[in-house]
Image (cartoon, rainbow, N blue to C red; front, top):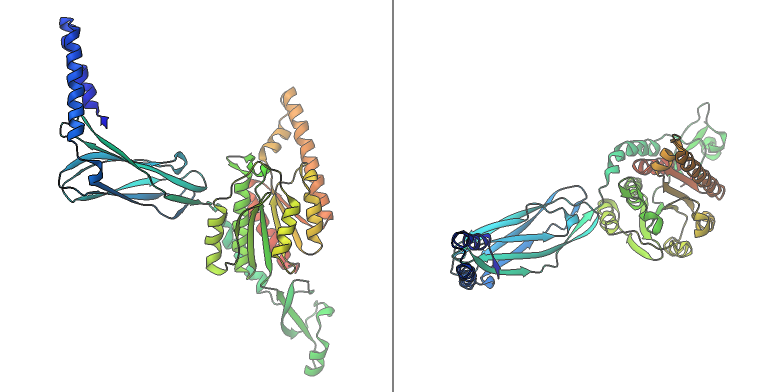
Length: 430
């Protein structure tokens, strides 16, 4: 049961004669009568079981994109029903205009829409649909909350997809190149052509030249159907906010762009979110099915306040890969990585695979290093510079172990990682 604003207004009207006559008994009688009328009105209201509710929730939507939930209300009884409903959602779902009034005759239905604008990735769960049916006097009514098990999956925003056309053009240029001067470990034979001045003599095909009585050289194209394994670190450092979002979100953007680019290149992509255990994965999908599967898997990846288990990550990668592959570690490169086991992990993986370590730089560190207005600013600048030197030293050690290191600001990490992939592709290192 509930009471309406009309009940409160009617009770307040009793204060007028009480103020004029100073008769408290009249005031109590007035209030008691108002409450009895509200109770009688609620008892006369239609039963809540006479109204059916059904909601339709979209399966998924990208972050920052709008969608709508449809709620259908049906009068299953023979009496006319008036009232309102509230379509409740958790705050991060961004529900607006979620209260709707209805006035339905016997066996009538009405549809209402609740706009949603999610502000966070992951599963946004629906709350109860609350129904209020008014009595004939509109002083009170019956109320019922209907639980729902529905959820809306909010996919990563993937703003870095705007960089994909330019990288695809570069990829097509690499794949369509007539010749490569020197065969690399990741190139395969394409065709023969006549020798021209400037060609490397090491690519001359002497047997074919002897048969044709002219000098022929081999041309190569980057090998396709390679393996690309992307590990997204979801340990405690990924929870640190860089700008308005956690580091993890920038890593997910980079993983999505690299996966899209590698799939267009004909490579097989596997993506895993990992800290001390596997949090999400996308593998086995190729072609048009890859990106929807990847976005759906990474949508629910959240940082966990634990230390990364890099030895477990090595075991996971070795179990999933049976041949040489490009292994991309999207993690945080800073002084704490010395104790976390990242160096040993890279050294172990680099013996068999090509390793790329990608990390998000914090723009606030550069701002602190540049500010020199006060004594406190000088101390902050010194700490920032020391942190940058330690990070640079760690990056140098990673390169000495055979890994490529990519460090960039959050908005630049995805294109920088894609460019590194294209450079390795062009150099025949994949």
